[in-house]
Amino acid sequence: MTKYQPADLATKEIYDQILATVGNGPAKSAGKVLLLYEEKITFIGDCCVRMNKLVHFRSFLQNASLHLNFTDRHNYELSEGLLKNNPNIDRLSLLPWTEIDFADYDLIFCIAYDEVRLLEYLAEKYGEGILSGRFRPMVYSISELLLIPRKESRCIFPFFNELMSYVTDSLPGELYISQDERDWGDQWLKARGLQPEEELLVMCDSSGGRDKLLSNTVYFDLLSSILDRPGVRVLVFDERNIGKEEFYRQWLGGRKARRIIVSKGMTLRQNLCLIASRHTKMVFGPCTGLMHCSSSIYNHFLRNGLDRSAVPVLITYTGTYSKENKGAYFWWGSSPLIRCLMLKERGGKPEMMLLSDLSVAEREKNDTLPCSFYTPEMLLDFINLSMYEKN
Image (tube, rainbow, N blue to C red; front, top):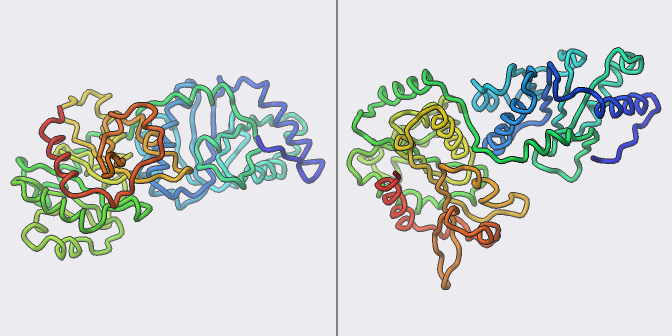
């Protein structure tokens, strides 16, 4: 916790009252809990991985009603896409602080880079009630748990140590697509010409960084070879409706491009329902958000009775990671359905290998090669092997 000294005595007295309260209240038996998420979410993958931790809150605070509030309204699409139907949250909202009755909650978790702002707001709005004892807020910080670390962060509220140790256990994430949503995805694909006997392969072709992607030449050579197989259709997402359909036609030619189904300008949730379709046989892409979502979707289906043989082949390819981005094992080590590919130099040349095949020591080494070293042949061989021997 950052050492913090409030600028004025009144705020300091309120801060001291909050610190005195959090260590003594019956936090584990709280009735109403507010998770106050203050930051704009930038990356789907980060959000998917971090929101998976909510299952621990539900398990630990078993009798509590959990409310998650995103103050930044830019988070609406991601929160709707990733958290709809989530049984670990009782209410999801996008309210400014002025519309939140903080005194209505037994326990408040702050998720912000600047937690001082919340302290100052509580001091201004509820200072008299806090000092008189009418309102005894229990405010904890979980910013370091749910946010990407920043050096300039001002995290001043204490950790809920018992909960923090409980949350460290790594579990496969889940994303809660309903059967009605799966039905919708099936019907949408059928309306675009997908036949019952055809295999649908989902190709994720975008990422937050260009260095995480295959080159266009390698990607389209691979895709062209995939489309040589009879009975294969490919789904591509064009979330921003930037003209991918024509772009693919220019690379592949008209005959093969007609076997591409493009989802144009649809919401994240709609695209996740397409990934969840019963027609999907493979999802392939870089270390990016949609791959994390795919993993979480099918983790959930498996936990609810889906036969393992009905799970699509899920393949992610990875490149180099900066120190801040941890490495492939950090992102995929708790994703049992994902076949995580990486390249390492062996005998003076790139060799493709599976993360799951590496020793613990090898997984931790930061010696992977960039995505530019992948070839269409090595990826196609792996896809063919995985598709025919996935069970």
